[in-house]
Image (cartoon, rainbow, N blue to C red; front, side):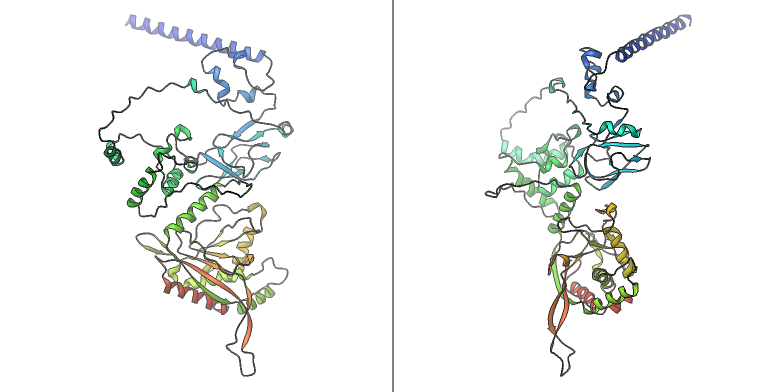
Length: 526
């Protein structure tokens, strides 16, 4: 017992000595740093402070430590990087800044809206401060997680010091510093290489001999749509050699793998219920002169992928009908006269047509449905996405109007005006443009007579409205002394249908009900 106590006491004494030596060493190092003048580049010099060591200190410039904040010629500040706003987020695009340079913020305020590969997410402040400089502009392309996007300070007087602030590039570690990988022995050649290549894809999943591939969900989706084998892209450019969406988009098949891609696509299409389109190499247009490339936002990529999938998977057909607007124009004039000139609400023809489309769903509820593979789901509430745009070339957005069947015409007009006319809410957020049960696209403002729109899954119908124009039509109610022809204001309405749910007869019934509500607008009160 006595010998154990003596040994334990000796060990504790030794630990105290080691801890005291380490503490004194750190104190000397700290005093040396404080006594040395600051570098003009606002960075610590490895040789001046830590010598030519191979430890962590020698690579301090390669790490995002707060030392460049403490020992800097700039006032106290913080470099804020783009956070990972979702578990799978690798990059993001800043859609809009809600704070400007020199503007103060408090905890809970939204710095900016960030477009990820899945949705648009708000980046909220966790503390109080002032935005001194914005480093990543809105719409400036993809920004990696952790890359600096702004500078914040606590004192308003320090904002001017960061007017020309430039973030220094991070020094990447040299490849020579990496640990060399152990050589992998080459496999013994098989006497029948053709048979082995044919059986390898089938044996890999069960045997587990193939290396596991790490890819983001968006990369897997794009690769499946384009028929690209992810194993050809490994290793990827993402964290830990993960394959990301940009790897798939930038992939160009080489001559040696061009023959293998159609075979892999054929196997995939046989096992999948969706149609796959073989990828074709990009053909260069000759004789076109100069050109300009414009970046594509994450939301635009998502919309393009969704429309491409809908066009491939949905059996489209379109029905058109001519609708007379004389009665609905008179009703619009009477309603606006009743509201008065001082009213902030002004009823438009588009508002009445949206209401008529919701009323037609009561007559033909099958059009307000969704294809669910095993069942057809018919919805009780009519939620309509309305395509809107502020100016030509600005792009169309589809804000959602919920329960349009229970809304009045004035309520529809107010809801659309709140979205379109507010500068601080344009473009609409992802929540405002959520998926509804039906879509209305009015292209009359562009002078389009008719259109054949693409259905957006999981919806089964979409209505396209053309321009209202004066036409000469037969005067059916004419007497003996009246003209046999008359002039009426008309437009062409085209209904896009998913033939899996809405066949030709059901689509015709819906258009007939829509025409009846437009030409007899008093039925909208029922």
